[in-house]
Image (tube, rainbow, N blue to C red; front, side, top):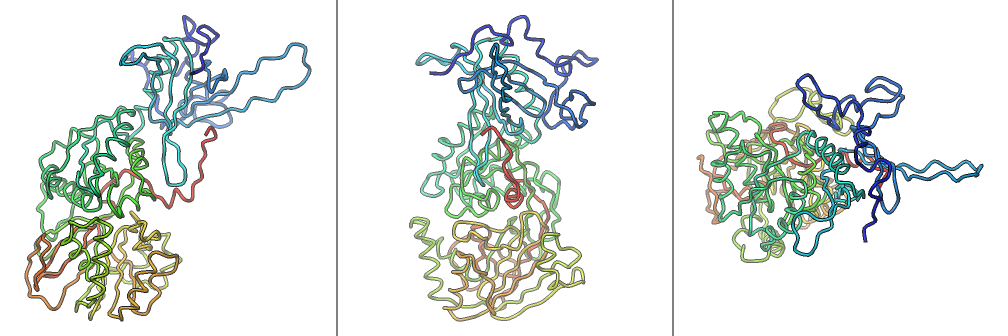
Length: 551
């Protein structure tokens, strides 16, 4: 049974409640409106014994009162950046012993995503009920995983709890990037049809708890998401959420960036200089590999993805355009030509098989008929002056000094990977492209020249280990910003088709897990920070330590 606080104890409400409001929270501006309090304000609240924002003083509380927390009566203070509480220990009459100061616990307001009035209701009762206090919902981190935690603050005073509830809601509403209305696109066929169940069971309740309106559409056919994003009134939403696997995410990313070009009046062709996507995109992973979600969150976990969206964690991400001479083919993040494209094309022919079996079958069959492609490959490497700082020590000795100088490679190639993100997944925990980052302005070009089948298999197996998968004489890697790849055994043309039956004139490409086929040279260009995704930079998170001392 929930613990109860006394109805009327000092600080529990009634006519004296307003004495707990600091001058900052209670005063009005010249227009008679209450000043908005934000946990992101630079001054951090007024401090005792100093100027607002100055050092050396304790924050003057916006509110202060008494709640029962975990069956203990506590002195609770709310500042513009933290919620703090410490147990109340009454003095013992006649005791000469110096009592130890009670340990203070706290939560940073930026970690709170919802506050609710807690009530006891009868069975079937939806409104009203006996007030018990407040429940604070906090986002906590365990490694890369995020999860929610509810903390109850008991107080039976309606007026007192209402003041705290309104003040906390006002602060939470002041955080930037936290969405209030989302467009949710679900692929009901993703990974054995699990996507709707994952969304309605794990994600929708969190959105409701955070007071986010979600307008849900389930796609009925391939290309439905693309059509939806072309026609959708995007100005009504704060963000887009995609629930599905790599193929679904690829379609939504392409559609969202295409819509941005349409709204900007851009001519969509092979030489397009694209504008950024208008809204951030959230990815709820429900596929087999989910490389983008894994690279973004460091883990394949729908609740973690949902909490990144709720908390408004925005991560700018580099993206690529794939084009022929006069036609834009696709927006995307990663691509494979050769072995990677052929295995996907074969898997697409066997979609009746379970996803994991289909992938393994396609890889084995493609290995059995392994053959190289005769290609001309041109690329613009990143120069030493353009190299991001985190790459300097590792790569600067191998980089050219010249800027925008095209390099050329020809011959028989087994596989070519061009990736603007690390492409982490359970099959390659270190990443398919470990030398690039989400937004460092580089693509990793990985070239696998013709070799024997056993040697190529050794190279593939290295991705699942801690060993260097590139430590082979037939493998070379480059950090680049532009690539052109032209198969030499095809007729010239600009055809690009989305189907699974291959002809002699078409070569399959795996672009973000989606099959596309080209019969001519494909030009890949990098566009820094072209889209915002809900998530975080997992490398920065690995360096940071959890600082919440209350959990």
